[in-house]
Image (cartoon, rainbow, N blue to C red; front, side):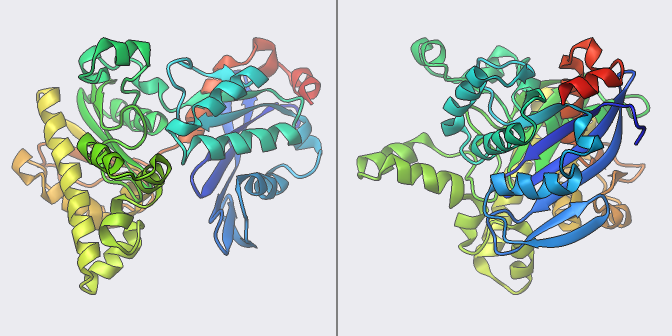
Length: 408
């Protein structure tokens, strides 16, 4: 690192993980200095990776402890690097109607974010835990929230509104927000930078949470997630699309709303359908050995993805490209192959060799003859977080080293 450049930290809390990237900031440009990822929060053994070096760190009980462990390695103590930190950016999944762009986290903002936790219980609470942990560690460094919902602010009204009375839609704020916005924006940016550009694009974020978006000329016009991150594709522990009548019937039978909420967020999806696991890697192994639940869950998973791809091809008036990201999308060639083979009627022609080689790297996995290009896109949410925070900082913050020192 250059001695005088200020530093910007991007933190990205997942359900059982915490990712971080540290950037140096000079002349408005961002240069990656160090990256870190801690996986296995809440499990018997967690693993921390700093750049290309991975180590086991024992049990990490929660996200507060995860932040301590990760930041102890990334920015140890109160040394020179920590003293040059000018801002910390956090990914927050649900910004509600009140947050439409990056915002500095004050005590009032933190209270408002807490009030949205019920809408994204797998995401907002862990992220806010990391916000508090970082604030305790760097009390004089400003923190900013960057929202997954921002990318979908431009959804057209017919895609944004549910078919509900105005009193519910406007009086109670029931509308479609869309999620995984940073991931979908990253994939959109990749597609728009390809030679000739891409007009009609579907982006697929496939991980523990899954979503699809229809993007026309770089702007989203539809997305699979709505009021909360429960809607749309089948996910690891969330059901995706579900007839509201199921909830009415469960309520009529006396099921507690707390139980319904717990099941919908943590026990449904691939886990509920298979009866075995919500992890696609484990389900693929079980499928090979004839596990009926795993076979059923994976078939439903792929079928739901194909339904959305077909629907979005219609919404877009045709399709030029598909971008696939996320932990499953970037690392599971067999899943991508099944998706592509289900789209042969659209003219998708899979390059099997390219697909097998595309593990964690950007790559085109269709042949030159394919009517629709399919690209694997490693999603870099932390870079987008850092860019949003950089653009929100006072100009003086990245002018010289004096601002970096004063922030500490």
